[in-house]
Image 1 (cartoon, rainbow, N blue to C red):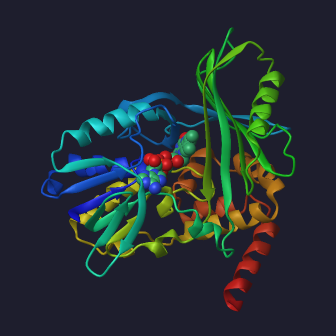
Image 2: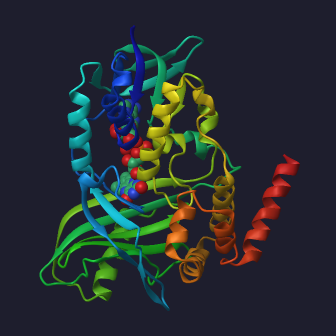
Amino acid sequence: MKYYDYIITGAGAAGLMLAYRLAKDSFFDQKSILIIDSVERNADDRTWSFWEDSDGEWDGLVSKYWDSVIFADSKSHLKLSLSPYRYKMINSKDFYQEVWSVIRSKSNIKFLKQEVVNIIPNNKNVEVHTRDMIFTASKLFNSIPNPENYTKQNKYPVLQQHFVGWFIKTDTSCFDSSTATFMDFGIPQEGNTRFMYVLPISSNKALVEYTLFSKELLNYSSYEAGIKAYLERRDIGNYTILRKEQGAIPMTVYPFSTHNSSKLINIGTNGGWTKPSTGYTFNNCSRKTLDLLNALKGDSNLKRFDKITKFTFYDMLFLDVLSAQNKLGSVLFSKLFHKVDVKTLFRFLDDSSSFKEDLKIITSVPSILFIRALIKRLFSFVTQ
Ligand SMILES: Cc1cc2nc3c(=O)[nH]c(=O)nc-3n(C[C@H](O)[C@H](O)[C@H](O)COP(=O)(O)OP(=O)(O)OC[C@H]3O[C@@H](n4cnc5c(N)ncnc54)[C@H](O)[C@@H]3O)c2cc1C
């Protein structure tokens, strides 16, 4: 049984960001660190986008950014200036290459390509079982998804941000590459929250995604039919599909941190670092891995690392409403984007808005829906 100070299970966005930060900080040079993943990610398997209000740590990897975005529904079309924010895009291949080159330069960090089959915390440390080996660590950072945690409960609704995206190249100029389409609800909603998300890379190249916030996934062909219909509606006929991507990201306020202990902390989507009301995760991974490094330096109890805030409560009510009446997504987002400045919305979604800003957002959506959800929640807390 080989011992490491730290083991990171899962080398995706969160695991690799943490390893990258540990590698860059000489404070951790004496720590033996093992990363385990069943695959070694190095391809363009996903595109990460996020907003930032200034220059950012990952700017060297940003392949494209936008200073304005479009919000649209069946009745309106808003072009919104983001300044001083920027909506930025990173191709995963560039991210993997950069972080791996830093991680590989450190002799105290090893990578093992194996499937993890069990994780067993005991009194002194944590055991990690792969198909043919067992390791122990004094601290384990686990990003391997464990959907059973949140699918086998019914206290908190679980929606998913699910989508299929095509990178397309058109024969003629079809896109305004200075503006990303954040949400276009002008497509049949079919009882759900459905929208198009379009990231134009140039006038003839774009990522076009058919996206839902709902409980159930669709057949793969339905997403593709949605993309085709959207392109037809925009009179985009001659195009080549360069690459496809798909995802299903859990949206829930299920308290993931209850599975943390002083020795084991769940990170990334598996640690509840996905913003429940949007599915955005990349920026949270960046912030939280920084906080985690500081917590490790202070030898803090990892059990207290993730905290419940007022934003958990807002997310809970939002998901309660969207889960009970999934068709209302278009109306809710439309009210938000029409009545609230997009920068205030970004601060709210970044969990950094003031109470005054929160009030502006809360009063922009139909209050009756949220009051009903609040009463239901209070009732469930009293009766449990
Ligand atoms: C296509 C796609 C696009 C996305 N776009 C955005 C975006 O634009 N903006 C944003 O903020 N978020 C986005 N997300 C959401 C989120 O940022 C990503 O899912 C992100 O990769 C989550 O990081 P993670 O480390 O939690 O999980 P992952 O990156 O999925 O890492 C988990 C790792 O665990 C490994 N693993 C799983 N099981 C085992 C096992 N048994 N043994 C060993 N290893 C195992 C996997 O191989 C994987 O490498 C997107 C997600 C997808 C799928």
